[in-house]
Length: 422
Ligand code: GTP
Ligand code: MG
Figure 1 (cartoon, rainbow, N blue to C red):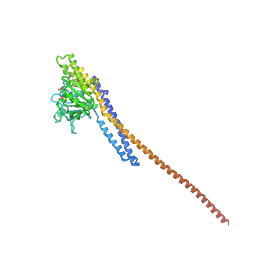
Figure 2: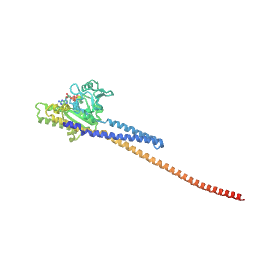
Figure 3: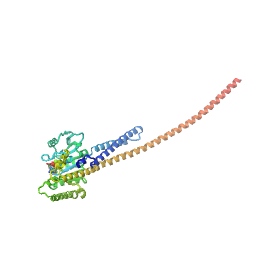
Figure 4: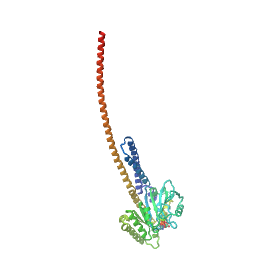
């Protein structure tokens, strides 16, 4: 198997950090839910029997049931989110397709992305779309139909279309990665709305540049705003269409290397000096030179059982293909670690505080129960003492009576025998 296939089919993917953490926290919350239910039933019974707990306490316990259920629901839906931005036609949709290993999103001439498109995994092998504000599932039979549906829908550029694609078709979807594709940053005036509506919960941003030109003001401005609204966003930069540079006639290898190092320097400066989102070392690990179109073609060939280089567009395919895989690996490490922190850290401290609060309330109730039991015991002891006193008295009386009767009988007997003798 080619390395990429091997990597796909085993579970050593860094995404497993998130997958395992999600399973673990969901299991723990399942236990917390059970515990909260049991405790609430117990507390209600206590109230009915002895009124040891008051109404406010019972209500507080019930509020934990709702709280825990709400957290569980959020946890089950949690995923890792990556959003792609860049100037129009730089290849955003193509990069997503290459990562999904299939041409899912429409790309190219006549298929400009005109609203936000979110691709996420669906269960049960179903493929469908949902537009914003509607619960209707529009079935998608094939990709052509999906492209047409996206063109026909009259959508505002900052609205969201959700595309559900069978999980089992791609390991990234299976592992809960959600992709967000966007219209070109150069065609919109509503960048602030975009960020507020689609970016605040993204774990990773990918800036897709065209390696044939330099970063534009619109692209820079967009990420300046993102980094003002979010503290230290994770940003990857893809210099896409790198195959085109290799295809340039008269392009010497040394010249290519020079262009590459110039681009790299600019990208690193942008991340470190302008946005100040990472240090030099981190930034160097976030800049890549790839060809999305070629990677997708190679993967389609691989799926047919052919060698990946059959999808090559230009010389130097292998290096570009490895660089794309390298990007994916670093991206997976980054997104899973970031998502675990942002999605689960808060919930795990909440879980701790709920169970801590419940424990101290139960300790408190237990103390009251102990006092109550001691009180009952004292009452019981007092009663026993009294009963014992009465018993002794009774015994004494009985003994005296017995003596009296005995004496009387003897007296009568004496009198009777005396009378008989007489
Ligand atoms: P918008 O949705 O219009 O903003 O564009 P986009 O950024 O999604 O670009 P898209 O993926 O639609 O790609 C635009 C065109 O560039 C398509 O015809 C792609 O096939 C082509 N393209 C994308 N990536 C590459 C690449 O790496 N190399 C080459 N040669 N062509 C590419
Ligand atoms: Mg597009």
